[in-house]
Image (cartoon, rainbow, N blue to C red; front, side, top):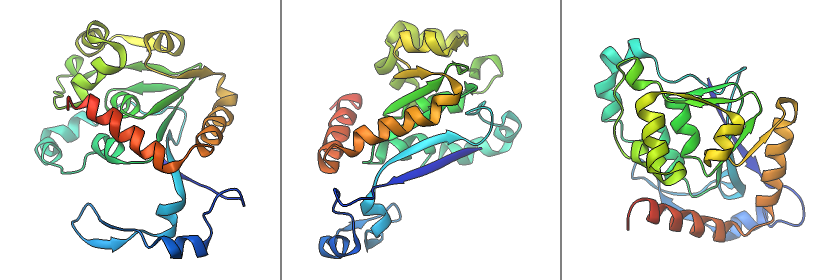
Length: 212
């Protein structure tokens, strides 16, 4: 299972109280095309942490499910990878244990990846006849380079955390028992930055990724 955890700003140094939220009156068109006002939670959430609920971040999709569900997934308007990229909030992947297949590309489309020293990364699709296409395949070339991306996707090798760090696949490797503390430290540093500037920077990076 994958847990999405929003990190809310608290404390007097940030203007996130109810009165400020009421003054903002921020409105938007949501993913369903409905015009609405943003909630206080949406306004005061600076970032999202994506984490595995158990010993592992995740081992990818259910191949048996793909026999009947792949077509529906292919036409899914908002797959998880796209939701992560469309979010204007910074997204951190907190990875421990296996991070394979669909969970690997979920992690590498995040803005930051913090890994425990027992993390293992890799793709598995060609080994189990599970097809993959779409932007998240070539997206990896922007993360680790063209040669290494092809190696990961076509040879299905597995990469320990420190090797993943050398590749540029992760930002930091820490002992397993310090993983949450390390992620909290990254969150604390992001909290010091302007939320508006972070949103603009993320959009700018995405433009480069999309070839604009």
